[in-house]
Amino acid sequence: MAYRNGTYIAFHAEGKTDPTASDIKYYRTLKMWHENDGTDFRFVNSHEKVSAVRDTSQAATIKRSLRERLDNSKNMVLIIGPTTKNDTDFVPYEIGYAVDTCGIPIIATYTSTGYDIIRDPKALSGWWPSALAMRIANGTASVIHIPFKQKVIDNAIGQFSHNNLPLGGGLGIYGDAAYRQFGLL
Image 1 (tube, rainbow, N blue to C red):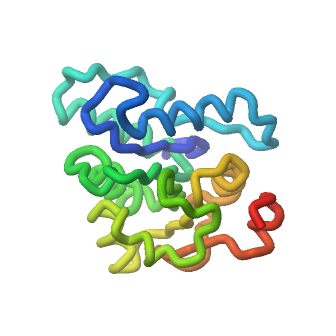
Image 2 (cartoon, rainbow, N blue to C red):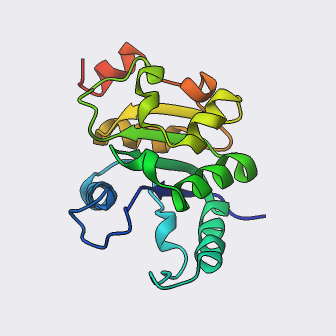
C-alpha cells in the first residue's frame, strides 16, 4: 500500500512548453506559493515524487508515471481554466484514475471565472472536463469547488484527503464563514 501524503496537481498544458502559454503558469504559481507561504501543513508535490517523464515519452510510459504519482497522493488539485475542458488525453485520464481507482477528492480550483467566491458549482459546469462532469453526475467524485486563491487552496489541501472527503459529493463548496476566514467576504 502506498504512503498517501502527496497533493497531485493536474492542469491542461495544451501541449505547450512555454510557461505563459497554458495553465502551467498556475501550477508554477502554486509551487511559488508553497515556497513562501508559511502554512502549517506539509505540501508534498506529487509531480516531483517520480522522475520526470520527457515530452517524447510514449503515452503508456506517461500514464504509468501518472498512476504512480496518484497512488501516492491524498488529494488532487485540478486547475480549471478556459481550455481544461478541451483536454482529451491526460487530464481526463488523471481524473478517472484519481476518482475510480484512488478514491481521492478533487479540489477544483477555477482560474479565470471572475469569481472570488464559489457558491454554485453547477453554474461553472461549462468549464468542467467531461471526465469530471460524468463523475459528478454519477455521484462517484468528491469535489470541493474553490477560486484560485492561495488561502482557499492551502486550506483545502490541508483539510481534504482520501480519509476526509468534502461534503456535498461532487458539488462541495465552502460556506460564508470559511470565506470570511479567508478574507474574501
